[in-house]
Image (cartoon, rainbow, N blue to C red; front, top):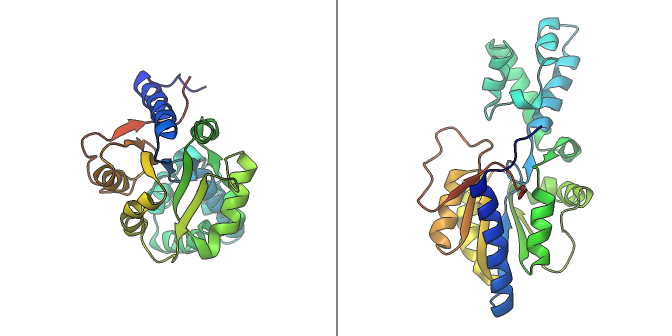
Length: 246
């Protein structure tokens, strides 16, 4: 059972909704910008499912690998796959390499998006922003070619606003483009849609870009998983565990 949200998290989310309402009343259009993976979604279950499946497929040849991966749960998934495998006792180069190839071929496939879990409070908070008058912008590091239909399906399944007036879904045009480069180029262009009043992401670099582009916005960093060696958060970026307000 999760402990209640910390007061600073509750205060941040309530302040965001207040800003949205004020901006919606006087203009211009307020934008509430959300990343997906690691922010609105916990994609560790996706990785856990893929690795469990890998273990089952190699069980006949490598029973010890299957046994090790059978113990893996989403809480044991690290940002780097090699760290995840090492944590369950798998460090042989050939196994790590083969498992990584197997994971890479599936992690960005639509059929595995269904294993993602929603961050606590995420659906309710995004809907509250939309109902308060914000244009909700999903700004994700997923690519439009491979993951657009599956992303829309997932958002609809969980109850996030999608396919409605005041909702935008912005994905990478090219899967080879890094998440940071894509967002660094895209964040400033959001001014065409309105004024960013809040921005949430799990990567410090993206939060810092948003903080620089929109100094008056409330920028929230999700304390989930970030790329190793991420830069420190700029002054003014606030942290939160999830999106619960109570």
